[in-house]
Length: 276
Image 1 (cartoon, rainbow, N blue to C red):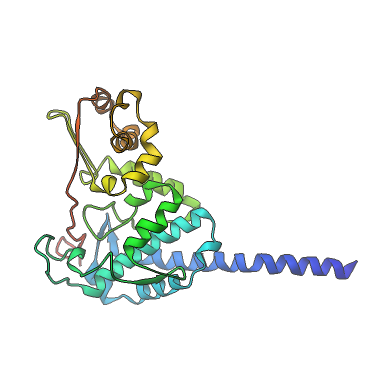
Image 2 (image 1 turned 90 degrees about the horizontal axis):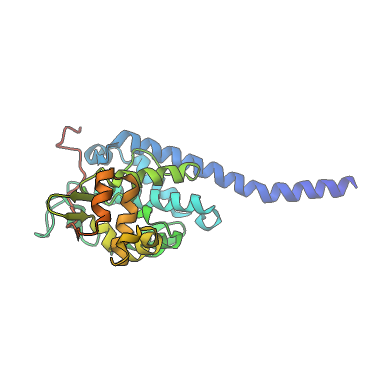
C-alpha cells in the first residue's frame, strides 16, 4: 500500500514539475522584459539610443523566447507571449539598424520602414518557430480571435497602438487589452470624429485586419447601422462604448462618412524629443 502511494505521489510530481518550471521561467522572462520597458519606454515613445547602448538584457530576453514551448501554455499565456515577443523583436530590429539610414522616399526619415524587409523578410527564431513579424501578425495572432491584439502591437511607429511600459501578462491580460481598446478613442492616430464635417477617420489597422474586426464586432453595432458594411459596423461597435453621448448620437444618425487614415510610420523615437 505504501509503495503504491509513493508511486502515485511521484507520478503527480512528474506531471506538475514541468508546468511549475515553465511558470517560473515565464515569470523570469517577464521580469526581464518589464525592466527593459520600464527603463526605455515613456508613453509609447522609446529611448532607442539608450536601448542600443545597453542592449544585453534585450538580446538575452529574445534569446530565451527562441526555445519557449509556447504550445504548452494557456491561451492567455500564449497571447501575452506573442504580443511581448512581437514588440521585443520590433525593438531589436530598430536598435540593430539605429540610427536608421534613409532609403525609401515614401516613408519618413528614420522610419522602421526604411529597414529593408523589416516586417516581411527578416527572420526571427521565436517559440520554436522561424517567423517574420508579418507572419506573427497574420498567421499566429488571428488564431486567438481577439482583434484588440492588433492595437497592442508596437510597430515602432507613431501610428501603431501605444507601446506599453510593461509586459503583457496572462493574469491581467483582459484588463490590459481592455485598456488598449479604450485608449483607441483618445488617440487621433486611432479615431477622429468630426461632427462638423460629418466625417470619421479610423486607423488603417482596422482596414488591414478587417476580417478579424468584422468577425468579432460587426454584429455588436447598433441596429441603426445595419446598412453599413461589416467593417464599418465593426469599427463603430469597437469605439462606441467609450464615446461621449453626443458622439454616439451622431453615429446613430448614420449620416457619417468613414475613411481610413494613412498610417504614420514615423519612428516612435524619444531621442530628440527630450529623451536621453
